Length: 169
Image (cartoon, rainbow, N blue to C red; front, top):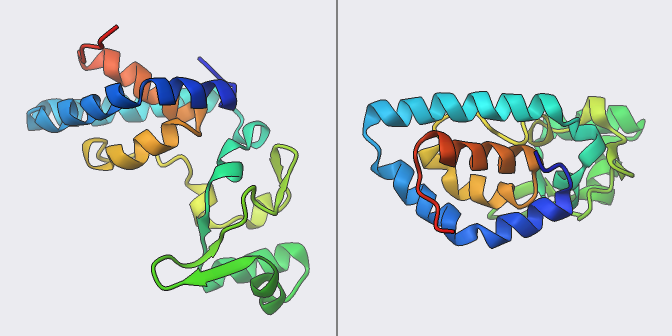
């Protein structure tokens, strides 16, 4: 399993066309095989997650804007011992398309590879890398995350082999 985020980014870019072909392959599976692919993807994702401590990687915190709602802003404020308005003023951006979000890259709460507000982090961070659910309908975001997240990259690469996808070498 490749754990180095920079190497994962290089490999994901190299396999970008293959990943798009895999997306098409998944969409063409019959419903029974799609359910099986979902089950395998979830299993592989959880296995990969057990081998990597996200708090030691931090790659997602360097590359992603994080959506936040008012409750999450309040939670960040409590964690930082600031008011919600101070948090909003210092770190929250707003636009009509994306709503409120932490848009700084890397995340302003990233300290080395660890989150300085781990207990107060937003739901978008808590749920990352979103490895559960219907894989075929989420392939666009999975392909994007495969270049950032070693967990997603590993799950995707193992899934290709498990479902009989033919790679071009």
